[in-house]
Image (cartoon, rainbow, N blue to C red):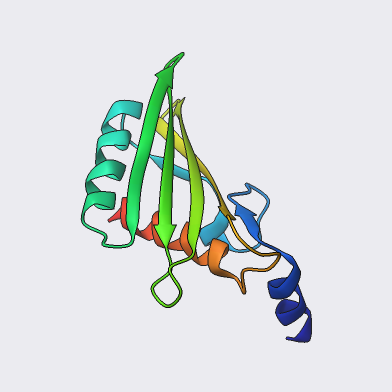
Length: 122
């Protein structure tokens, strides 16, 4: 428990990792095309008061989105970069979240990625 608290003071970055022990922090596989997944993600983001789409770019059948999420209490902004890549069964969503300010996030970036996962999976 103390270890998690100390990491919260010194870590301000999280990403989906195929090897993560936490299933909610693994890349998301969806039976959708890259474009359909982008649309789904953008639609979900528009419904969230604290999330915003800053921009997206597509190339080589992939799509990169830059999102932000603002914390409710202090209004800190985290940057979330999402990469949607084609997969044999549809697409795979990779994401990373990083705080703009401070050296620690008290687990907020992991929570951002979990919220994103649950939002796009419906």
